[in-house]
Length: 95
Image 1 (cartoon, one colour):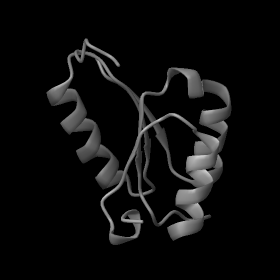
Image 2: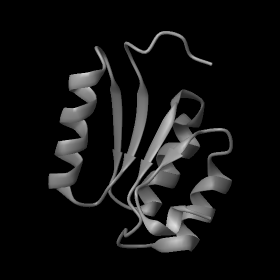
Image 3: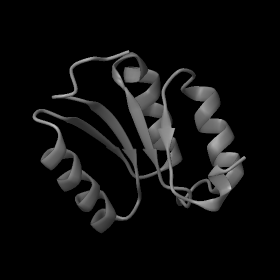
């Protein structure tokens, strides 16, 4: 478990630029040196995960992406990123 929370490596999977900016501002306000990777689609998220999964500490996941949504998105992301915590706020996440 990480003990120093001054930095955090986060993958933000969000297709809405306005929401991404809000999340980015929040992370920058609460971590001294966050590393924020952004993916605007499932395809882009899988590319980032294939290249940098060992560096990502948490995934913030939007459930309505242009190329995948809902339960299929959740299950596919979980299978691609075993061991990385995911966070989403949606009733579909309570399973």
